[in-house]
Image 1 (tube, rainbow, N blue to C red):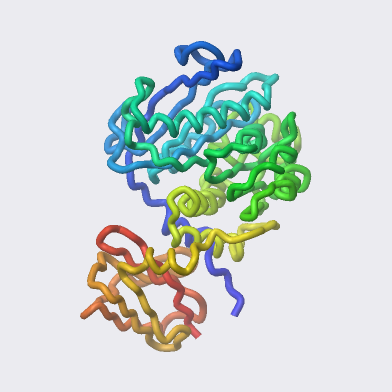
Image 2 (image 1 turned 90 degrees about the vertical axis):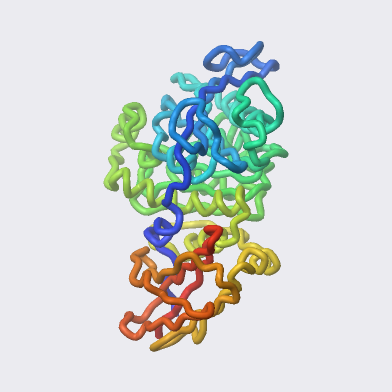
Length: 400
């Protein structure tokens, strides 16, 4: 049976829930070996003013970081675009437990791509160092996990390869509609070995998939790399869609947007969210969801895939040992039995592959439940079990 395992709205159901409020802080980093930049107050050398959005218990500026430690995600902006063109992205990521850093350098009409790539790398590395005693941003002491992803859009996407090249502190790389830079992104990609997610748009006439993102995928040295060309998306559909400069350039290229910004955001974030959860948080369920989605999502026009993010058997066993879930028979026609070797179940429900909850009244007795699927149409469904510690275990149920 060949059916889509996960489609767009399946992943929305699992990954869009906010866990934190968003705190904000402006930090100016500096590189004593270079000049220029943007902002002031970071010290001698190149100034790299950056807007930081992070998980907090209350929304506000310079508020306390939420309990826990959080990975760092650095995002580079597009050509003549500002950091606030991506407020929808950094809002989602900060609420989901990431410290998002948006450097504001190289925003002019004559940017230096090489410097921007170095800025992305330096900001990421220095953000990791803030976990230790510091006077620059003491609220981050003890709050920064040593996991880093660099990403970007358009010029920032191409520059993400420059920042990732030979970067020993990097955990993973991602980008949207990445454009070739000078020096060339595809050349820098030859030294990138971390898991890499490259997302482009089928209707992008500014930095087309075939001549930009596909070429970068070919060059990337990573053994786990994924290039996804998403149906109907244009260059400016990545971000909030409201940047005048981006929209003007896109319209000149005769490729206006046809997809709402809300839908476009869901389309690409439903790949990015599980990718980051898998690589930065080592979440095995997220790795499974990502691999299922890149292998079967209906929103992908074309793709290039190499390698797998799936956890090894031991890791999966450890992750799910809390519930040790069994479902049988599967496939089935009438009923399935759900057996958990733990009473640590907080909630459970059954969903369609488009993310609709069709049964949230699954009753367990002695860690076992009998679930009727008689009235369901043939196909694949998702059983979601949430433990008391909010770990989520999912498994597929097939109705014959």
